[in-house]
Amino acid sequence: MAATHSKHGLSASSTRPKARSSRLMSAFEFDTYGFERPDDFDYKTYQDFMSSYLRVLARRAAKWDVMVKNKERVKKSVKVKRYVRKGIPNEHRPMVWMCVSGAQERMEANPDLFQKLLSGPKDQQLMETIQMDLYRTFPENIFFKDLKDPKSLRGHLQNVLVAFGHHNKSIGYCQGLNFIAALMLLVVRDDHKVFWLLDTIVTNILPDYYARDMVGLKTDQEVLGELIKLKVPNVHAKITGEGIHWSLICTKWFICLFADVLPVESVLRIWDSLLFEGSKVLFRISLTLVKLHEEKLLKCKNFPEITEIFKGMTQDKIAFNCHDLMQNSFILPGSLPQSLINKLREKHRRVIEEE
Image (cartoon, rainbow, N blue to C red):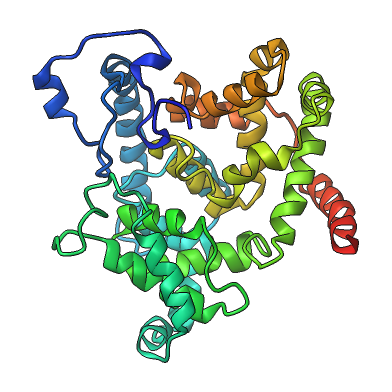
């Protein structure tokens, strides 16, 4: 793990050494979502970014306020897609995520399922597995530190994972789901809705990613390799020439949906589009990160240097500027037709299943 924790964005060491006053440190010790910032957090770069990004957020919020006024939900449309790509204001995220993902419709069709799963018989092995991971989920976040704290979300996280595991018995619990559910709870603050968001992602948006054989995840790692070969051929030649498989570098990107990998605001912007457009967004972000770091990767002389670049690319200025990252993701990779992705998936899934 590189020096900067991914959820907080830049550290001073990733840009330049700098002194910080104790007053500034105490004022910004935690971010908006309750994550404690590291000692070397680069406040100057953060302030420079936020001074411009807040203006973007204000413009987007005004447009969203008009669109959702007097509405309890939004429906998919070209206009909504355009708005989603530019970012959903945090106050509207719970409602918009539920609507555009299809989770709202599924919840309304089964309004009592969540509580029935929580009150029904439990698989003790599943419960013990979940319990172990609860304490490893964002332990530096003020909302997940202490179960006895009335503000704690750890009990709600347990509810989501327990209900999900008993509803999806073929999966049970898979590491990575805890980070996804926890980050969703920080935004949505409703374990019932987060259960349906998580279930919709696993069932509809990323089928077979979290199955016991993870065939969907393995397939998409192979697809990513082919897309990098197509879009960034020099990097593909470099990486494969070193004998490195893409799954070694990028599996966590996909299995956590970039949670606990990229700065939190960037993750939420990715999820905005993921929940609307589907898994293609994961490929776009991955290709963009590789393409933006192409020059550095081509200068690497060995495997350790390559892995350091991949660690750093999720924590530098590019990853931190969520607005630019998302804009680049819909431009730099160029055309990425779903028909191409489907064709590559079919090809590699067949090979993986035969193996």
